[in-house]
Amino acid sequence: MITGKRKFWESHVAAQRRSGLSQAKYCEAQGLSHSSLGYWVTKLNRDTGAGGDGRFLPVKLSAEPIEIVVGCAIVRAPAGADSAEIRRIVEALSC
Image (cartoon, rainbow, N blue to C red):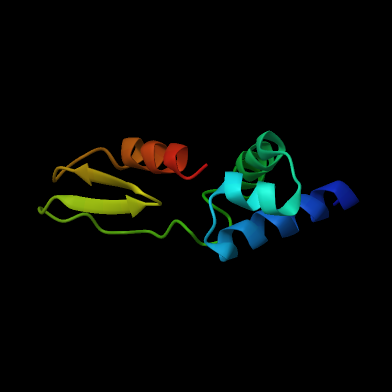
């Protein structure tokens, strides 16, 4: 059962992602609690699986190093890096 509270936060999480604003700036503009938005981002990602909104796509790693840009951070991984570890790093930076 989806509650009104969940729908409220789902819409704000989606709007924040579309806005291009950081979570902090979005919350300031909308009069929302930054910690509450962060909680719901994490909860919704966990409930729906890897990013649930299609942010995480399957990739085939090659023998070349990879570079992933997450907001203002850049994650560089050597060829053969553990994909589960890369995913954990990217998810941590996505909050």
